[in-house]
Length: 256
Ligand SMILES: [Zn+2]
Ligand SMILES: [Zn+2]
Image 1 (spheres, rainbow, N blue to C red):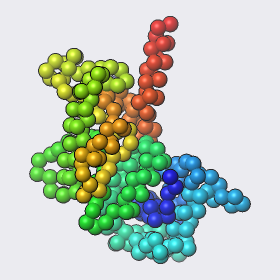
Image 2 (spheres, helix red, strand yellow):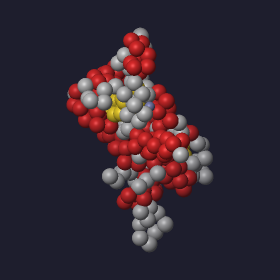
Image 3 (tube, helix red, strand yellow):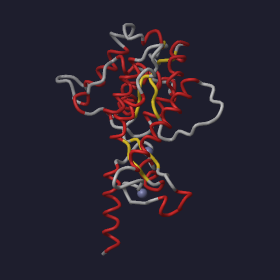
């Protein structure tokens, strides 16, 4: 999928908030590093120095600066460095946790683009909730959006545990086969970590059961060790099959 200019607005604000010396050229560079575009967006436009991706950033800050509302959310000083207006700061703050999660988990270009596409389409009365695999529900949660994210993330995890416990493999780590119940008895019963291979999100008004049904394809049961290895380097998420290959190749070394 190709990203649109409008979808790049929020990520641009995110980067501007972290760096007070961003002009258009540096914003292009930073957004490219953040997304690592693939496919059509990564191609160079013939006869130009721009990729399709960088051309969109250029449009956002240039010819479409006001149509995409970039001019409401940012200002520029005489050197061309961007800063956030109050409106920009407020808009960014609503999504700062979502963006931190999406851009620091090592998701693919397509997955990152998908989420920013959904974020750009949310409305005041239908917010996007990004479900988190590391959620722990705490008492007395005050922020409504966070509370909803937590309760749905927990529902998703519980549904996944229920789902995997009914498969032939049961609640075993899908990489190394570790079984918490077998190892720890009652203390480990029904325990497994649930990994999100792709980000899971839904609009507030969408049905959680539909989200769960869709998301379960991209969830994986893992033991704590294998899970940690997958996330060890935040910007390089391993896939389950990549980690399986590593384990297999290390085991074969030990066999010889
Ligand atoms: Zn494992
Ligand atoms: Zn994970």
